[in-house]
Amino acid sequence: MVDPGVITAFIVNIVICFGLPVGCILYLLIAKKRAIIPVLVGAAVFVVFQLIIRIPLLQYVLPSMPWYADMLHRPWLIGIFLGLTAGLFEEGGRYLGYRTLLKNRSRWIDGFAFGVGHGGIEAITLVGLTNISNLALALSINSGQFDQLAAQLPADVASQIVSQLTALQPLDAYLAGIERIFAFIIQIALSLLVLISVRERKLWIAGLAVLAHMLIDAPMVILPEVFGANIYQIEMFVAAVAVLALVFIILSRRAFRKPPKNNADMEPAPGAPKSE
Image (cartoon, rainbow, N blue to C red; front, side):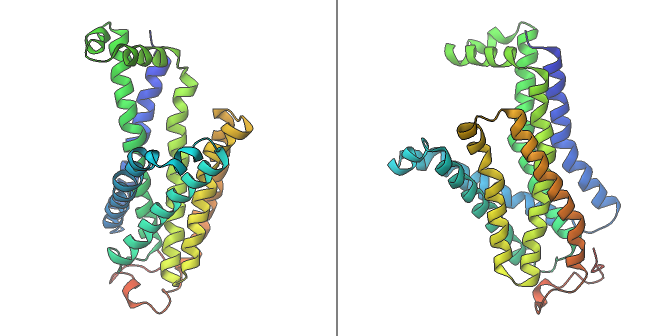
């Protein structure tokens, strides 16, 4: 039987993954910040550059290459490689999104909205939908209806699903939702950093965003594999990064008080307050 606390955790995680981006979007609508288009572009960038390009490459293309298969056994290398590719694809996607689809949207609130879309669709697709699936499976196990589903699955797969869900502890289950809050904040900060790069016409700032992304993602592999860190220690690291990201989000408003550098394409939309 799946612990009722785990089922509650799945529900809370679903609320977080869907409610956090939806709540931010409602704020943007109510406050009339005219920043919904950046939300959509941010979401599209994640879908295209991560879900459609990078993740399939990692799952279906690179594993057939000897150098990549060898790298999988080297925690430092694979951690840096995965972090670097995540940074290149996501930050490169952000940069292209700003330069092509959001030429007339360079306010702070536009960068914030871009991060809402980017981090929101990430939370929904990678964690929200998974928790919906886990919730359905847990309820079917507890109600005795899982056997009907198990009959359609390989025996080892069905057994693995049951063993994983019944062994899961509530606190561990909650970590998925908590981590999404941290990741959501980090995605907004990175979106603002890349927008500053575009506004200032300084490509090295976008490179800094790629580096920051790598330094955030690489430890997710290196800490447990090399240093034996447990899931709670890893989440403490992510929490610390999220706090720094939140500070950056607040302080970054200063960079948007002056107009973009010699770039007519990036001027704020007509009538939009430049400070926002």
